[in-house]
Amino acid sequence: MKRISAIALSLAALQLGAQSNYWQNHVEYKMDIDMNVEENTFNGEQWLTFTNNSPDTITEVYYHLYFNAFQPGSMMDTRSRNISDPDGRVKDRIFHLESDEVGFHEILSLEQDGQTVNYDIQQTVMKVELQRPIIPGDASVFHMTFHSQVPVQIRRSGRDNKEDVEYSMSQWYPKMAMYDEDGWHPDPYVGREFYAEFGNFLVNIKIDKDYVVGGTGVLTNPEAVGHGYGPELTGRVSDKITYTFAADNVHDFAWAADPDFIHDIVELENGMPVHFFYQEETANVENWEKLQEAVPAYFSFMAEHFGAYDYPQFSVIQAGDGGMEYPMCTFVVGGGDEWEGFLGLFVHEATHNWYYGMLGTNETNYPWMDEGFTTFAEDEFMGMFTDNPNVHQSAYNVYAQLDASGLREPMSTPGDHFNHNFAYSISSYYMGSMFLNQMRSVVGEEAFWNGMMRYYNVWKFKHPKPEDFLRIMERESGLVLDWYLSYWKDQTKTIDYAVDSVLPMGEGATLIRLANNGEMPMPVDVVIELEGGTEIMYTIPLVMMHGHKDEGLAASPWPWTHPTYELEVSYNMRDIRAIRLNPNRQVADLNPKNDTWESEDSE
Ligand SMILES: [Zn+2]
Image (cartoon, rainbow, N blue to C red):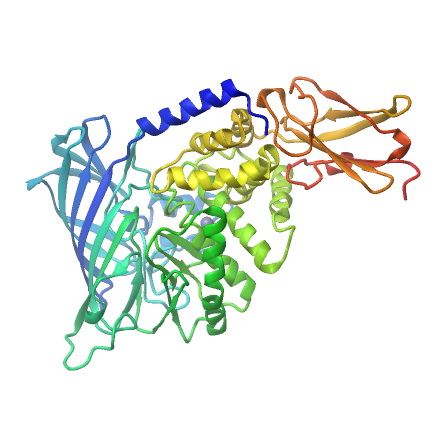
């Protein structure tokens, strides 16, 4: 790490500027929900206080009506029936839903500050013309009544999932869309994913007394429900009970309900409860018990490397169609034999409470920021837990497959707009993870890990963008990194550095000529292995980094315009056994064959 003071100063100024101009709005939801479990419908009443902290006067607002996606002919249905590699869970299933199986939200009334407002619904998005513009610093209360039908579970949300869990209630209520410095984000629900404002939720769920409910937030009335929260209800219990959940600093609220849920609670060392909801019949109970033993190690690993989990509770709920992240909880499938797969699924979804939950990135536009960062942290934990030092390697392998397939699109493509789900998945999960693992190699271990912690501290409960993350790493390393974000995120160029030739230069000197055969420039780490076994690492930064990481011997910088580079080292050529580029394989060099040179008499 070589700090050049002028650059460090200007970066610091930029950083301060970004923070002082930053704003975000605020939402306050109160909802009363009355479930009808015979008809799989519910009536809802919602009071939403929206505070405009933007510098703009707001004249319209948007709501998401996610359940409307589960109707034949919807955008989600049509997209799934036209893409060449549809999600196996969706395919044409929406198209064949009967009228009592579809989902819908019927808006019965909507008022802004007591005055009825007009609205227009286009499938999953409702646009509301305001009666009164909301000026900067002002707030409005939106009062809505609605009637909704829970769809058969097709994707994420719905009733009667394949493991017979009755209600998986995610994306289940009319939810205000996101307004940030780029304006409204009323993204239609096609498949993926979500972006919303932070705020507080108070949700009353009235449901038949046999149902066990778990979800976002903390239950505030355990004595009124029993079911593992409080002592079992005795005496005459009315047909319905009301669960009251409160959650602060979250941008969504999800819940699940089933009469057959077992409800276990494990307390971490710091006193935080982790709740588990699963069915004896369909879950792999042994895995759920093992998971309860593993969660303390997970939460302390995350706190040490990525920042502390900053909510008062977490719940793991068997309610998924795979696994999906929600604030303060996750829905996962609960069956299956494989323990490591189940643990990995939990770790992935729980880790989203950092990369999505607390660091509220736009999942629709930057799926790699939540999926990729989550995959990276998941792999780090699983590598530690299973003692596997090469845990990131599979990402590099599938990235190479994607590149060879010809289906690759820029990682900056919004989640719903990739031509192939195959390309979306590898791009978001694996290239997003590699973005971090390569960053490690560019800025060095110390700056990288300090940067991950600083990212958490600076952006917790906010909405960072790719550039905000980059600023953090620039500040932490003292390096200029804009080129890296541009190449990896916006372009599809690939990396291929090579050892071109090695020449003796007389006594005590050898010339190593390197070649850049690829289109994406990267700093290059070169390890010289001497005959005695000693290894010396050189790091060759790029000119445009204006510095180098604090690892190895810094060589003079390589201008990206130059196809070759000469590294002169002060060893006799006969004393060099091998030369290796990219020694820890953190750089996604697609042609590793030309990365190594070995002396002819080496064995
Ligand atoms: Zn994920």
